[in-house]
Image (cartoon, rainbow, N blue to C red; front, top):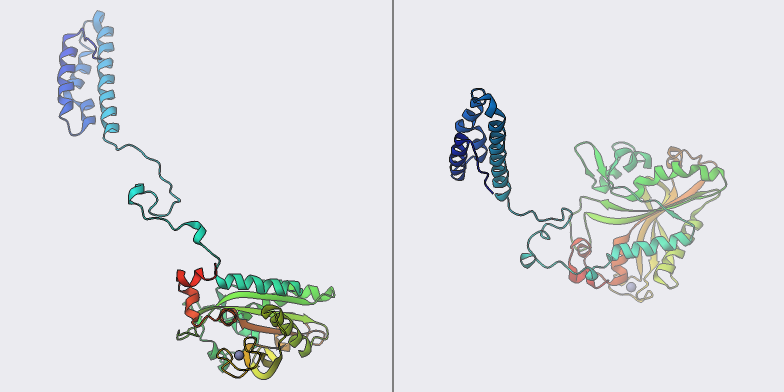
Length: 348
Ligand SMILES: [Zn+2]
């Protein structure tokens, strides 16, 4: 509602300014209009008897103009709607334009994780604790602490990814052996063995094909105590494999070479799928080489702060992907990282 200005000059100015305001681009400029400022100059010269009333009218006009400016700014903004800043990119677009989200009940655990949990559960019942490996490490843990001398040709067997800062993407879970030995050596003094399994993601610069991936899972095992020998190694792995495949198996070891074990072995089990009759999985040999293992090299124990005269131990490392592939008859290792729903839903 417009006020009736009693002062003619204020009344005229009010009419003029409000009319001008409508066509203005920069609405705020109305508050600096010369016509308005001229009225303020008049305060000094109006009759002192009328000065207070004039001032009140002038202030009223100014507040009217300020209200007009305020309202014009807010009316230019589109209405504010709340958005969920944590939502996937498309949730904030109108519902009818939004792609349908995948129903959550269609999700399932990745077969590698399901099997890994089962494997850790078996070793847990055998008295092993689990320590997770890491995805970035250094040359010392990858090679040096495992008795690979500098320039040792065996380093080349691992096709290791190295960053510009000379960090390595672990090519085996053995990178954790030195840390496990150091962190658990106090257990030995207390008469307890060191019994640790180390699951982890490992990386090699492989030519990728149906049986080779650049990224795969390994499970390392470390056991150290008094009087530990090869018989303990064979019995432990046999007990695990028989539980995992839920049947009696024959096992055998053949000499091999790793810098960090002495002696070193390749560990083979009788084929759990054909009972040694011969099948595609065991390539008609009846046997499957499943992992590498051996008695921990005295140098590795020493570097872990453990006296090799007092204690001995065994270690092994094996691929989890291959174990799962055999168990489920998966023909191509690349399925694991493909994100292919058809493949994954078979394990839901
Ligand atoms: Zn077979």
